[in-house]
Image 1 (cartoon, rainbow, N blue to C red):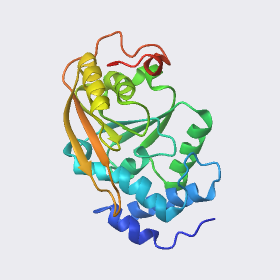
Image 2 (image 1 turned 45 degrees about the horizontal axis):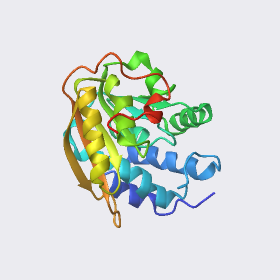
Image 3 (image 1 turned 180 degrees about the vertical axis):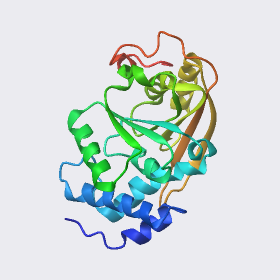
Length: 235
């Protein structure tokens, strides 16, 4: 197992105002990821993961809509980021970790138990098939999941009107952003901000794309499973 020396100090910086108990929950997540060679991430060393996963997730707390959200959905949760990190930081919020792969779902369930996270639930389903979550989320988040039009099609039906979508992106690309805007207009979403963030020292070209749901998403969305990726909106 990789040493976790220095992790408390890194998490104190990444977690900003988090309590000691919350930082220990995050450390427990990192320890489990480091110990499990099948963890669904290429970044497993705790010190690196504290930056690339935890700090990169918690930087979204700079947005008011994130800090005040009560019902959150994390699309394609994978190894648990940003969803589990936000669940730890926002213990009063209800966080749904949406993941379609059974092994990853089981891994997420083990993480929740190991870290004592009681306000997160694993939803083992494709996002477009999670009908129970329709029009109910204050906040939907996604990190390195898919092209933006695809992410928006997954997210929009889950948001209540007035809710917020935050999409983690890297370097800005004009054509991709224009495709995202076109898709948003079809889904009842409006981009309100692209915020450059520096979650940790040395981080470059990181941006949070923020959308607000301004109107009901047309009933034809989401399309049936797999279509969003095969025929992305906005192309």
